[in-house]
Amino acid sequence: MSETSRTSSARIWPTLVYTDAREAIRFLVSAFGFVEKAVYGDGDVVHHAQLDWPGGGGIMLGSPRKDSAISGLPAGVGSVYIVVDDADTLHDRAAAAGATITQGLRDEDYGSRGFTCRDPEGVYWSFGTYTGE
Image (cartoon, rainbow, N blue to C red):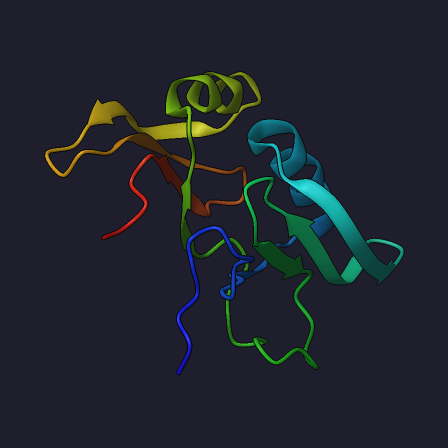
């Protein structure tokens, strides 16, 4: 089995469901800095969207659909942690864009600095400097 270095492309891509996926995309790009890579859908329904994270990897999301592999996952449910270099600046950006800060900026005893917030549909997003062991 080969090891993946921290600088290589991410192999884990969280998938989320949003009631208003098109609005979620706009929010995630504006509030957190995701980059819209691909959006496929019809009208208000998003079948698949890929948002890249500037530091590598990203997320996939879409509208609730009966034919989806994750059709049992309710919209607005989830928790994602993302490594950032500057949690303070992102905290201010997220708050200004309307994210609900659920845990303000803090320094953890394991060496991370970060915060947690919720997007308009309720997904929890944690951002911090902790990169793992």
